[in-house]
Image (cartoon, rainbow, N blue to C red; front, side, top):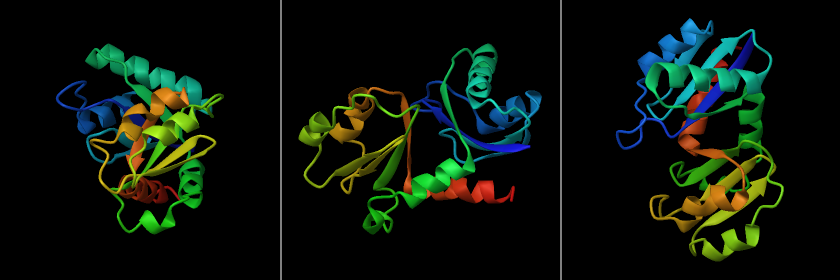
Length: 180
């Protein structure tokens, strides 16, 4: 059985696209997934499945949520090794002490023509970023809420993405350790 991490984009934000984690667990169990664990309401799940095709599995999850809840979120599936790699490649180790200021955008694919110069132009003075294949690291010491860099990153990278702060990444990684 293979372990997956599902990162959902755009659920349970501002009262829109509501999907309580208890309902997500039930839905995953109905899909035949095992050992389903979730972390916070923003859409993070760890589960096991016999399915080996992550792309098809992601589409199947999204379609099932559309049937049951009336909206289809973007679902990015990772394996624990992907999360371990994201942690290992962190270009801002000095920012780990403030985990809410350090983020990773997990990209659906490696950007073909990212507008890195434009991202550099709009970043705040204290902000830093680095693109590393399918990971876009952001250090936003003054917060993400007003960051133009955060608001524009997905569009300027040119690929779908979903972000998590460093604390959430470590919590999700801890959930995967239950399967080893």
